[in-house]
Length: 111
Length: 117
Image 1 (tube, each protein chain N blue to C red):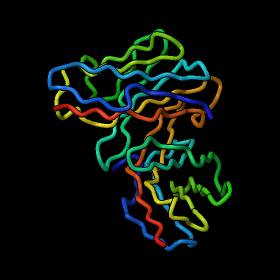
Image 2 (cartoon, rainbow over the protein chains, first blue to last red):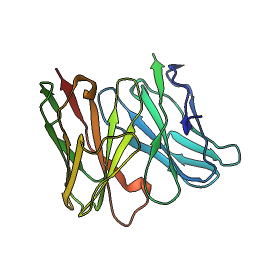
Image 3 (tube, rainbow over the protein chains, first blue to last red):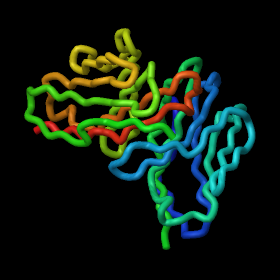
């Protein structure tokens, strides 16, 4: 079982819709959860991080964490074509700052 | 956010040669830097953790004699791919951790695309 799993997609949504990206992780001891956006040929950029169960909102982005279900999601409201990218879920397990990445979900926002 | 640079941004080399990639934190001192590798349509895989003044910690399956890491100062870590082969062609990305912060204070460089002919 992979440590961090994501559906590779592509996930296609129309412009203005809500995009929902999901991620599951295997280690119940995981403590910190991150969503990165990666455009083709570029390095990842941090969008959101969440440490506690529940929702965390930042602008059009909402991260949701459910530790009991070992599930973290990212909602993007009012999706724009510029949101088209690969979204990587990452997890930190145990102490330290080592990130374990999922394989990413490709999002396509269509006009 | 903090700025991390990598040099070169891309490099093409012949099989059997060595290539050095630099990672610099420009506006903070990084005691820890991380090196990742990303193959096309795959995720980032951590190769090693680089700590200033000490030996790097390599992830399982990464050959430490092939991928030499030197973290000589608080703002510079280098990755040398020795005797490069076509299968080493990849996107190499470093990140630098700002001391005193959590995992969210890990800042990524722009990456180096290595092509080995």
